[in-house]
Length: 326
Image (tube, rainbow, N blue to C red; front, side, top):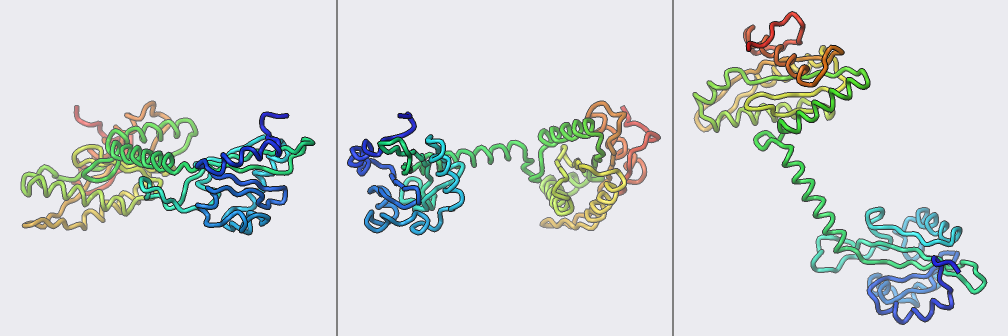
């Protein structure tokens, strides 16, 4: 007899024990009719064995996805091997309410389920046993840990003042996009911009006002970007945007929208109304670039060109532009 099967006759002596242990036990015949229903199942479902015995599991529990369970059980009958489903694959098979006080945040019981073929004396498998384990404590703790890790990961890559990507994470995105474009010969553009005369804002209105100006710029930026655009605070009053699969001419259209929206901003502090502008440099990735820093430098050269030509404007990098002063 296979180690993966239980003789149906041997199964009965286990019943007294299985009535008292804290796991669910259900036996189904080949027509999915319930033959055995232990006290765990009765307590959590509110249905007695007399109520469910002889009924199909799908009639008694309409929330169970019939196609999924039929496929799961079919493999057990066919291969005569046990199989499993975990809470991570499917949170539960039976929609039982969770009554555990420690993990009261979970509305329903998380379950792991084992499906075991039950062999008759002639070796045929006409019944299966489902063993249902309450793993709510484990699941809730793991979900909470995953949520904590996600929160910590987000904090580690987020600029706290603007809630944009911080410099470290944004630069890693820049490196990845550079590698992608180099490998697949695609076109993307990089925008770098900063706030004109920002030192004067801090000197005249104070650093809290300067922080509010930066926050307002970030807020405007978020409203204008596509979901595929990657924005970050590069440092101080400087920002960067990676525009995937976007040529420079299209990047210029977005850059102008950003520039005009920010020019129209009026930042209100307790005592002052602050108007300001930005200058924007744009660089389209090209085959001549060998590393991400070169792409970044080209955008900075275009930004410096704007500064030298009156500020409050946008420029696309060209090889005729003067390099940054050393």
